[in-house]
Image (cartoon, rainbow, N blue to C red; front, side, top):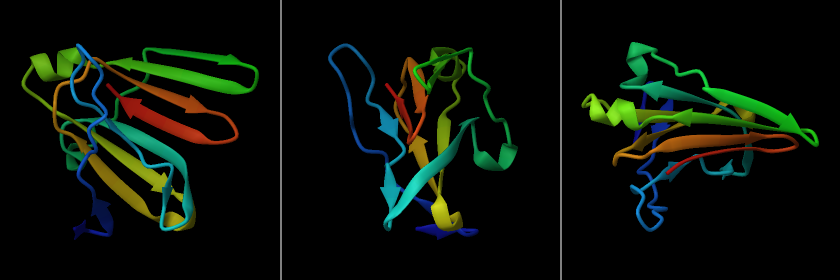
Length: 114
């Protein structure tokens, strides 16, 4: 479904034992690579973009981490906006509670919440 030029996707289950079901930005969308992302506390229209709590770079790869259990404890939800080459954006709602989101930024970009 497209709303305001942004495609909405159902989040794929990537649950691990003992963890909530997760969500991630697909690495490509219609052949275009993921180039950036934003993690929102609540609806994207509220523009509440979360900053990572930690960030470290090793070997040319930056790893960022967002502990997010408190968002769900407060009764709110997360949304990922995944931005692709050629200007396409995809919204992935993180429907079930997760503990943290982790991003890896190097020659490619990836973010997953679990």
